[in-house]
Amino acid sequence: MRTHLLFLLTTLTVTGTAVPASAADYPGPGVVTGDLASHDPSMVRTDAGYLLFATHDRVETRTSPDRIRFDRTGSAFETAPSWVYDYNPDGDVWAPDTSFHNGQYWMYYSASTTGSNHSAIGVATSPTGLPGTWQDHGVVHSTTTGDDHNAIDPNLLVDSRGRWWLSFGSFWTGVRMFQLDPATGKRHPTDQTLHRLASRPEEPHAVEAPAIIEHGGQYYLFVSFDLCCRGVDSTYRIMVGRSADPTGPYLDRDGKPMADGGGTEILAGHDTIIGPGGQSVMPDSDGDLLVYHYYDATAGGDHRLGINLLGWDDQGWPYVR
Image (tube, rainbow, N blue to C red; front, side, top):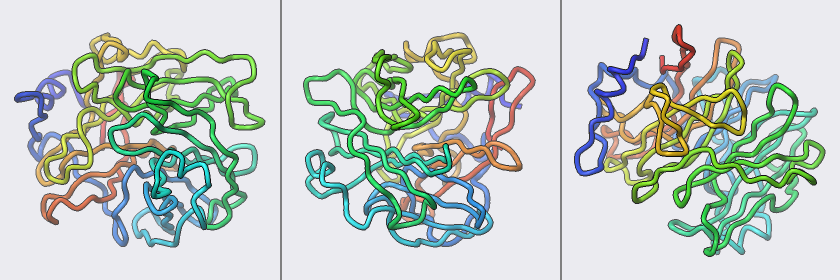
């Protein structure tokens, strides 16, 4: 089982940059083949297999019959929703989060440009999840350069009481959350509270990509620390904390609040696996799956899809199998 000792060993830093762990510290990604160039992947299971969604090209879509072989099958949107161009002049769409509720597929996704918090999160629905079937419903939340947070990297949580929550955020003051109306998938009409879940007080405030699941009566917040999208120079790593309530406070294994920079590392660079992060978590028939991207040192730093099962130790903390 992963222990606090492993946490100490794998978070050694030099001048703020995470040092890759050895190959023995973490398992490699599970076996996957096909078209694996996926950033910020999100996956759902269907009657026919699996659908995988990723950043860029109007939400890249891949299918898999067995969670091993993945083939590119098009884009979620035939054309980017018009509002996207207000936040990204190329119509680029980032970090989709997809799940199945109320008889249809729901996708939250974001539009922005690198280094800016002039950003927005939108929502779309589909009866099948297949390319070309998605109907956009417009902006759920937006931020401007005058705001202290950033409306990207959305993640939907439906809690044990049936309440809908959207967590999101990147850099600035970190990860935020608000309640949604399940009928529309947009902001709750009466609860407008903006909760703060995780932050990094030190520059450059590098925390993003929340994903929350419920396990054993606790809620677990997974985030990415440090820097993405730099090939073999990427320093992304995956951290986790937990809370008895969806809105927090989330504490790490040592009891430090994630809102104050806390987080327990469960996956970092090791061997030829560089900068794992941009994660989502998906329940499947054989357990909870950690779905993420990383950079492959053996392929010149190209990005790749990673999938691992999560285990749970006797204290209720997740580890990567």
